[in-house]
Image (cartoon, rainbow, N blue to C red; front, side, top):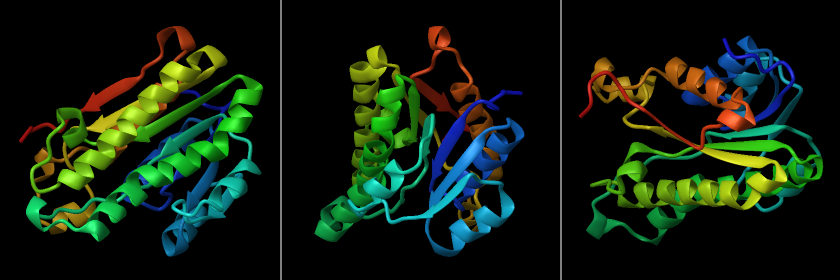
Length: 227
């Protein structure tokens, strides 16, 4: 098992299905956590997982940056985001804003919040969850989601190449299929066509525990039965 007892990890999207699995893995690995989320989901996560700090923030709001800067962390794990589908010819400006605000803008503000302290201490790691569609650069019926998640990957890899010499690294996690959540099961998806969220969480802990000389910048995780 990964040992993260010397790490303080900020987890965004707290209370979501994937974030809950990651929080459990971080707790098991001994990490201190800063939970960032909204409303009832955040409150549930705060009751379930021990946290150094709990921040109820709208990460699409630029004001969230200052709130994040008040908390010092070694690592940011960004799971906040949203998925939606639409026919490409029917997508409108609201769909565009929804996808890029929830997936890319939240990441941008989170990074702005944690980066000054990481650069000052010359040590830090930013891990963001992208998507299989982004890795393939194609997402029929989900073009805007795919584009926004591709932006997430490009941003993190650019951050890594720019700041690795200053002690800050980036990593992109690509779930190469749907994650096994109650919502996806309600949609009728087969369990073996979905990815075990605890397995994804173990991948996150593995990434965070790697030494600089054996770091991971991209990781694709697949379900048992690929579509």
